[in-house]
Image (cartoon, rainbow over all chains, first blue to last red; front, top):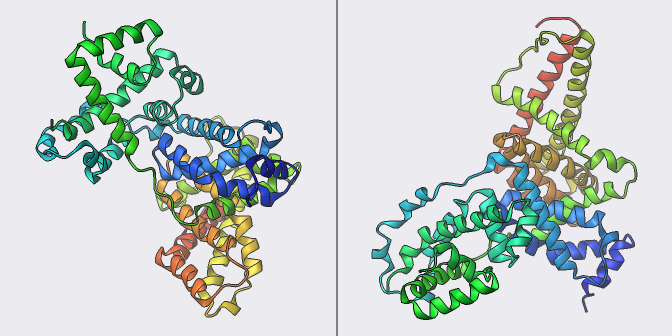
Length: 190
Length: 256
C-alpha cells in the first residue's frame, strides 16, 4: 500500500532520496498543469516544475507535518511561476482586446443550434480557449489562473503578485473580457 | 441601474462586498437583461473551465526526476552547493551564454577591442574571466559530444559502457539545464533549442535501465541523428574553441 504524503515527507526529510522521488512522481503532473496554466508555455512549465521541487527539497525541514503537502507544494509552484513571469518580461505576449475581435464576426453562423454541452466539448471552443488564454499578458494570465482555476481570492492574488487590489481586479477583468470576446460568439446561438 | 460587466465578474467569483452582493442578487432576480448577461458569462467561464489541461508526455515524472536528481545530489554536497545553484553560478552561466551567442550567431569570431577608458588591469581581468568561462562551456560541450559519439558509433549494446555513460549524462544534465535556461532568458532561442535537444538525449541516457536492448540503443541513436544533434554540438564546440583561440592570441599580443 502506498505511503501517505506525510509519511513519505518524513522519510525524505531524513535523507531518503527514494522517498523524495516518490513525491516527485506523485505530484509533478499536477505542478506542471498549474505552471502551464499560469505561464502558458510548456518549457516554462517544465522549468517551474524543476524549481518547485528543488525549493521543496531545500525547505522540507520547514514543512509542518500537519499541513497538506500538496497544498504546500502548490504554493511553491505558484511562487516559482510568478518569479519566472516577472523575470521574463520580454515574453509578454498579451494583445489588446481589439486583437481578439478578429475571432468574432462570423462565428454566430458556426454556432448553429448546438447544445451548450456539445459546444463546450467542441474542438473549436477548446482551440478558442487556448488562443484566448495565450493572448493574455503574463500578469493577466497569472491573475486569471489563480482566480479561476486555483480559486484564490483577489486579496490573496494581490499579495502573491505584488499588485494593488485594483490592479489585480483589472487584470482579471481584462482577462475575462478577452475570453468573452473570443468565446461568446460561439455560444450566442440562442 | 444595471450591473456593469465588472460587477458581474465580481459577482460570479463571489468577490462583491456583502451589501453589494445582496443588491446584485436582488437585481439579477428582477432584471432579465442582467440575468442574461450573467448566463452568457457563466457559459464562457464554464467553457474555459472545461478546456482540457495541457498534455503531458508519458514518462514525464521520470524525466523530471532525471533532471532533478543531479541537482539534489549537489544540494547534499555541502559547501559546493553555493556555487552550483547560487545566483552567482547562474550569472556565470549567463555570461558564458552571452559570449558564445555573440560568436555563434554572428557567424564570426571577432577580436575584442578594449573599451576606451578601461584600464589594462581591468581588461586583463575581463579577458581572463572570458577565457575561464569559455573553458567551462567548452568542457561541457566536449563531454556531451563524446557521449553522443559513443552512442552514434555503437553498432551493438555491448559497444557502449552504459554505467559510465549514464553517470556522465547525470552529471551533464544539470549544467545543460542551466545553460539552456540562461540562453532562453537572454533571448537566444536557437541556442536554447540546441541545448534543449541535447538535454532530452542526456535525460534519456541518465534514466536508462541497467540493461539496454538493441532497440533502445537504436532509439537513442535515432534521436541524435534525427535532430542532427551531433553536428549542432560540433558547430557550437568549434565556435567556442575559435573564440578561445582568439582570446589566447589576444592575450599573447598576437593579431590574427
